Length: 289
Length: 257
Image (tube, rainbow over all chains, first blue to last red; front, side, top):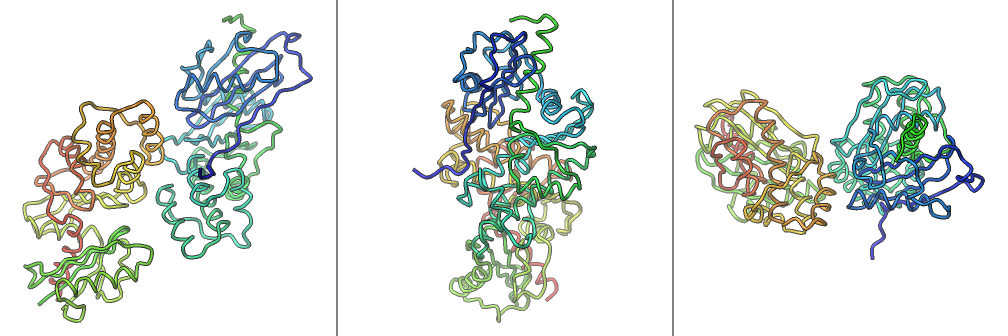
């Protein structure tokens, strides 16, 4: 069977030093996106466990799978969860959820937690959309701009390229930086056209690194355009899968002239984290299952 | 006097040879392939073989299309929009709106009685407004591109397609396939989607009868059906719809020769 280069590794993690049974408030968030789904459980405002999984063809199943994976290795079960907030395009389909909150709001809150209260501009580069969000010191959204119509600047676009070049999606970022000189970006922002353009470049003898550099450059440029439309106010942070692509991130930072903050948390869990934080706030206000 | 127009498109190269600005005496179409210059030579060789016409016999050659810069033996180049306009006018002087849907570009052009361009709108940025979209969808449905049209006419119910982008639409189709949606219904959704986009371009320039559809995608009966419904009119599709631009270039060549 042909290797699936676009298939990034699913993952999970939990904090072995936290005993959820001793916690005051246990809250959960699930972010069901079109490409990936994440689940997060927090105990008294600390991250307890999370998972990062690929969304299947069925949203409710994806939500259950994500939470199941996050809880693996812990003695917490889905039924024990006191309150769960769902987000992402599949948010209304979380079978064990009590409330749905938009991903813009959740990303704002999540980024505020991940990057600290100094963050003012969040760029979420997700599987099938790209969002630029302005937040205040509490992580509340003050403005946003989104592209969800076009694959350029999204994870799907990068997956298409990984597949074309036969390079694992986990490696495309680093590989794109292995060029001595930065090539011209591909001329088309459209993924379909950029793909034909890339095929032509490969045939003309361009090595994979150079093609990746050209595409990453075009992607960074497109995303910079979105950011410039709303304005970039420091501090700036990136969430979503493409935050892990060092090739796109470094080129983007160069173009907008601001470096992104670093976080010890997985960039893909921002939405689910925000959802779990909302759940925590709701529990404290008396919300129950 | 024989003139020729060469249209170097992103997918195919077309040449039309025109005698005395009236009669088509030669016509070829070959795949552009990876080496454009080679494809152009092949096209000329094919024209010589089938019509006995060589570049040296021609009073003038005009080039158009995305690759027009590569046409070494063309005296001058013209925009695709003006070539489309002239070609449509030559075939039917009553046409006032020309819709050209090629492999990578879609155009809506309003023309006058002399075949001059009055207004136009182009999409060259997005694959979802051109043949690249239907090709990708045919692949996702595991159907030959030439079968996609006839298949969609067998549809019995409307299925919505939300994705605007070819890349997302492909994923959306996969989901529909999982949900066991009948192929004809999916094929029809594909044509409705692309027709939607083309029609918004037509509305930008305004539609005036008569309307002609040219370009490779004109051969897709499913697309034509969706387009006619959306525009609420009968659309003329000439034979050899892909060659109309090259024909227009040949006519322009004759005007100056």
